[in-house]
Length: 611
Image (cartoon, rainbow, N blue to C red; front, side, top):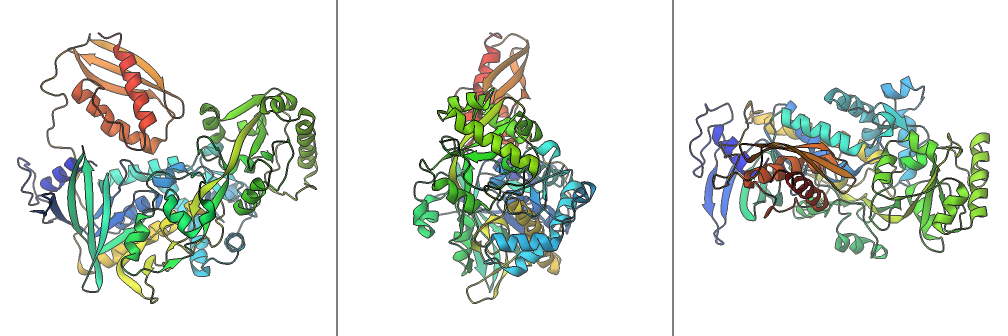
């Protein structure tokens, strides 16, 4: 929620807030003191109290917040970005789990033991065996838990390094991450969990030999507010450092200049916070390169495209590797090619088998040809070579034997249905396997091998689970399994002395803020108007209703943007347009400038006929 909404909520809980007046609500069981003070820089500081603080609102943080709440704790979720989701929202391929109901329904005889073996092998045995054991043993339960929350993980597909199909995703192979973020965030909203967006944790407070809260700075409309949030337990789930070139080149200098698939907030803040308390780091130098990243846009092309049958060819039109090997091996193979990039090639049959591909088509990342020869011509490669490569691949699919490179997975579809497609790819920084050292209780371990009381961590901010190389699909398994564990264990600790308890507040609306600026004048003709513009991933269409000369509502009829990011546009940007009765002077949502600009253009297009 915005800062003013959180403060309104706190005031309506019957708390002492000298900045707010006029809230006539009966106090609930939650009795927290909120005080204000002035720092030397004249920046006000608010002090809040809760049971559990979760830093980071990606998949791990959202899972931790839900489980902590459901265990009876009052939770405050802190996220430095203006939207929830983190890197989870960008995940596409699936969530690895063995022995699930969905596998059994599909006749897949996978086991936890094989999942464990695959993970250790992929990580070159550098993984922490206990963490891997815990993840693989609890992944199926994570799928069941997410399903109970409303997620669709019924489709099971192949990803690199897996002995069986175990990547769970929505029906038809639709992108999984954005879907999970929506489900998890809706569940935090339904539970009334306080979520502070645009709020950066700057310090974990450690007093009397235990963690007692955090310091944070919130930014809204250019104004900063400092917070001290007291709590018995803190969960760090702020993600990795894949979008911090200074940090990842510190550990791997050869990555200088590489593109990154990570969202803007993946800068390693949580690792730095934990290190300041003496936390140990595990596998920090292990940084994963994803082999299939679109070089011009840094868009990640999911491994599921290969899992459903695509092949890799170089600029000569030749295959050069087992496309379903681990990511480090495939990345190395691409970089060994003369031009250090390659093309994912597939046909209409593969496209129809995986909904995720539609996004790449909408983004204009695909090149198309009615025949293999036509595709080769469009790509500037030898037509006969590409034609022969595809013919050889089709023979391998039909025989079930890839004599050239020994590929054994993702060989279900021969390329026999026009048109044919290609996506240019090159390796990019994708996942940081190393981070804060934890145990199976998700407790943070210090450099002396002891736990730091009250401090927990989960997800990409931690190390030890993936070793030298993460298998596709294991990231989501990691963040959900350990996110749940961190939330549960943090709540257990916080509630040991009674705690504040989960909030029972049902009404969380902002104090009566006018819908329309009182200085605005009626400027439009009454009616319903539609407009559209091109966003980051395709068309954005809006419907604007004008009543009594004022913009009354703006409804988004169609969009193809990342849903978790688009939530901020719908929750913040659109109300601002209505309040100002114009798109002029309104700042774009940070990290969603293209989507914001498209909404502005669509609204203005609609209003051209309303004047």
